Image (cartoon, rainbow, N blue to C red; front, side, top):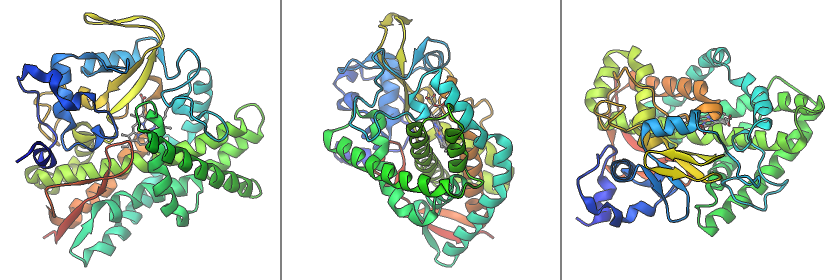
Length: 421
Ligand code: HEM
């Protein structure tokens, strides 16, 4: 079997090997999106963590792979998300309305102001109220596949749950979802435009233009009839004067739609894949549905959708025997930190009863994911509902099809279903 064929059936969790020729590893220069689509990105990341944990890539960007280093970079080291000249890791893209002002790409004080405004909608209590709606939605979706005896986990569950929920929360017509699915996945690549091929960046820019036109029209329409949704709240903040500029309103709308859509599809899809590949863990969950909370945390740690988060150093910063100079981009490899044996016992083992599980799938520090409660709740309901309703989840193929976004998100996941007894 050739290298590619081997890679195609490999599973996440391959630990580092002892091959000291790691520098020849062709995957060393591979970043998302290609890295996201590897069957086992953890193998490469384990080698980096073992041989060169503070790794300077040929393009001058650093990669951190140890849990403690990643936590320190996210929470303690003076850093931001913009370079000293104000540009971001997206480069200087010719975006409509100027560079993105999405909260994720802003430093304080703008970040602090935006975070306060946007976070209202994602409080844990608001998520508890939404849970009943997600339960009804999940039941309806599972009703549709029950008679078929098979389903595509992505098209039939992992995509419709988060996309319907974020559209309803934001007040965006669900009928337009097909358009978004295309636009949002293309747009994710702009978050790492410095790494992406030119044609991918061009598709991303075209998609942002579509999203901008779409949201401009929607905002003008909504102004006439403000309601009880996030878009209306953002418009109120903008109309209220100095709290939100028109371009910031646009950036938050587009950014939230993308954040709410793309990532949770990956969590649900990768989570179902991990359970299907570990029938012992699936059986545990079926026997005790109360394990779902820990199971979702383990899905996030074991094979989460976002492999890295970027920070820019504000000053020269020492990590071990290396100094990262000021104003350098540092990729905090969340996926590597989540498999660090110095932090997690038997880290490549999928164990839904793991208790000491403070993973970094949602990042950390001031940019810690605002949608974490929402994503957890959606995944608990969707995965929990699927497991409760059906018996064995039988993978139709050992190979998987990855989607087109920057993140580690499946494009489809066909499984055979058997009714639970
Ligand atoms: C499994 C699903 C999700 C994962 C794995 C995830 C992961 C992340 C990560 C890694 C970050 C960057 C954190 C950092 O740089 O330290 C982030 C930021 C963010 N996420 Fe999520 N996310 C998910 C779902 C969501 C959802 C459903 C929403 C809601 C719409 C959302 C909204 C946001 C926002 C607004 C930020 C920027 C926060 C800031 O810059 O202050 N995310 N997320």
